[in-house]
Length: 258
Image 1 (cartoon, rainbow, N blue to C red):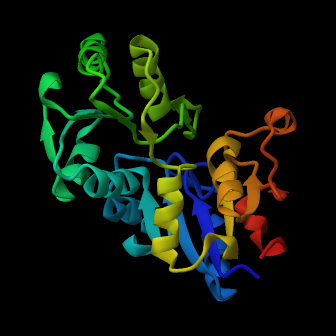
Image 2 (cartoon, rainbow, N blue to C red; image 1 turned 180 degrees about the vertical axis):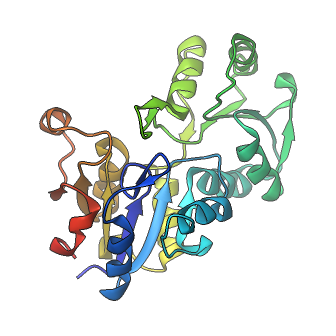
């Protein structure tokens, strides 16, 4: 039996602002089964506290210490690896605030940054793309992405995510990120282990994305569970080289794998 259960959020527990049917009960049953839950999201904008408030407002029983995000992972990584460096951020204020709270220095001038951090930016412009191009023309400047999610599931349809912005910058600069945070990165695996206090090979991971949730589970030695309530359909599952251990219609069926 798994000691810990790692649960994706968007597409697994909620879709947009609507809980997946049976998801609130599923989280309660994880606890009742003696497993430690940990929610992980590739959303880099919201703080743990804000995300927790959003989820508890929908009936989920969760505390900030049981939730990590791409913003959390990015801030921890940069504070550990680039604490003396100045960051130029292509992203939103929610991410900037988390980086400042981690004690990091930010600049709005592209030519003063030691590290370019790229993320989702719903006000992304040609000017911002140009500044990223100019910043990364210096090969000494590090290029960090918060998460690789090209799209985000919403109640209506998918919308562009951080990966869309990061790929645009990569396309114009000819540079891939030096490090990518969020799922399925090594940084995410390390954060999960520290948060749960157990080895990831004692954990189950449940998510809707093959290239982030399930791939992270494979890399970390977790038992992997794909749910059909998010972005992965049957066609994508058949074409993928990433194979989950289990496939469920939704997280509501989690008892069958616990």
